[in-house]
Length: 203
Image 1 (cartoon, rainbow, N blue to C red):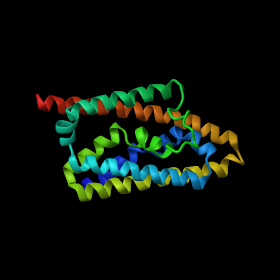
Image 2: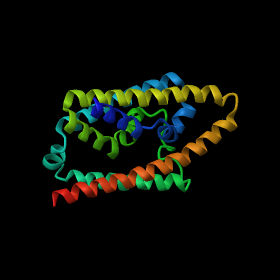
Image 3: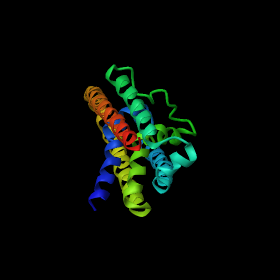
C-alpha cells in the first residue's frame, strides 16, 4: 500500500497543477470550460495508454526496443527538465504559448511532451517494476485523474476570478511561474543524479 501511495503521489506531483497551469495558460485564457475539460480528458486518455505500455514493458522497452539504457533516458530527461526550468526562471515564457487552441491535434500536443514526459515515463516504469501491471496502472490512473481534475478546477476558478479581478490572476501567474522554475530545476537535478546512480550500479 505504501508503494502504491508513493507512485500515485509521484505522478500527481510530476503533473503539478501549478506547473501545468503555466504551461497551458494560452488554452486556459482562450478556450471555454467545456471544451477545455474535453481536451484534458482526451489528453489524459492518450497519456494513460502510453504510461500503461511503459509500466507493462518496464526497462525492457529501453534495452530491447529503443536500444538505450534506462539511466541514459533519466539523465536526458533531467537535462530536458533543467532547460525548461531555466527558461521559466529567466522569464522566456511557457513552452506552450504558441499552441493553437483550435487545432485538431491540440489534445495530443497537451499529452506530449508535458503530460507524457521523461519524469512521468520514468515514474511509470518504476511503478510497473515494483507493483506489477494492475496496481501500477491503478496508481497512474488515479494520479492522472487527480492532477487533470485539479487543472480543470483551476480553469473554472480562473474564469470566475478573471472577470472580477484580472490583476490578481496576473500576479498568481507570475508567482506560479517562479515556483514552477524552482521545482522544475530541483527535480531535474535530482533526476540526473538518480540516472547517474543507476548507471554506476550497472558498471
